[in-house]
Image (cartoon, rainbow, N blue to C red):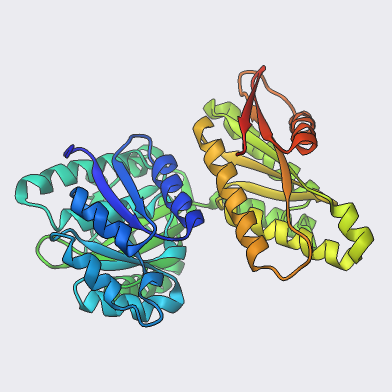
Amino acid sequence: MNDQIIKILLIEEDISYDIFIRSIINEGINISLFDIRSAKSIEGAIQALRDEQFDIILLDASFMENGKEESFSNVNAFARKTPVVILCEYEQKNIATEAVKKGAKDYFVKKQIDENTLPILLVYTVKHKKTEEALSISEKRFKTIIEHSSDIIAVLDANGNFNYTSSSLTRDFNYSPEDFVNKSIFDFIHPEDKEKTAQSYTKTISFRDTSHSMEFRFYKNNEGWRNFEAIGRSILDDTGKPTCILNCRDITERIKQEEELKKLSLMDELTSLHNRRGFLTLVHQQMKLANRNKEHLYVLFADVDKLKWINDLYGHAHGDILIKEAAKVLKSTFRDVDIVARLGGDEFAVVLIQTKEEGIDVIRKRLQERINVCNVTANRPYRLSMSIGVVRYEPDRPTSIEELITQADKLMYEQKKGKKNYKVLLGHEVKEINVA
């Protein structure tokens, strides 16, 4: 086993969630620190455990529903002291808690997992099962992960004192590492926010079974207050004392934009997505950042297939239902940082931020999986289907968002005619990818 890679066994029968986990592991980190193997059944998981040794096992709580509590015991019997972590929905927390009582290392609530929190939690979980030599390796991997994160990550003791801060805090907020020695996070929080943040932090430290979110203003050295959104999770350190991993994101610009959107009423009434004006307002700002940072953006244009036929045959009320379902699918497929909008009628657009070229096909597959799930669960005589086209924005060859939408619309229409592949415009090159 390569000591520089954490090997994960994911026991998950939901293909779309399997793809989601893989995508946030593969896209959320800039280097390959994880090797993931999937099993869609308990029997398949046991066979995988017979074949090789893993660092961590992620088990979907659904396998333990409907009187199948023994599923955890069956997996744990073959785990060979590998930590088992339960993945659950909020309503499955009782099942997950019982598994922890029987020997599971911990449980994660699915909706609280993203590309920043999952890798850190995985490394910390693995760390507590290693020998002293392997602990040193895990610590190096842990630091590698957080140093590559664009968000600010801090490790705090029970009183909020800094034990560790990622380089993004010192780099982006004009501090030196010495500024945080013998200091508490509350020394940097706005006086009006200290009380509510302290209350949230106390809950975070006290309850290890959930992550807690909080918002506060944090002082940027020599520049003033910035709005932070933070997610904290309590763990036990090597001495058994409670420690908090706090993942923070600067949301100052987002709050300003949201306030502007509210004032201008730039939301689509039917879907609650951004409308065309809201979309253009946000994208123009994002394109300025892309030009400044020399980063690519991807513009995805999507069209609901056969909407006119559905409107004519079943009525516009059914057409509106399908539009809302399409919006819900798109919203669940893309990240909060991406800009999702309904441009009008059956047309949608998405701007993908900080996405690599190889991630586009992962996202396309995730979108199709969500569409398939929607069609299986919906009670209607027609199916939701969407055609898409994707264009990459090149900061060294600036193009207007209107032109990018036109280009993506053209590629989308070509896919709609054949329904065999979709096309991505990368600069001057059109890349054609089979959807089969």
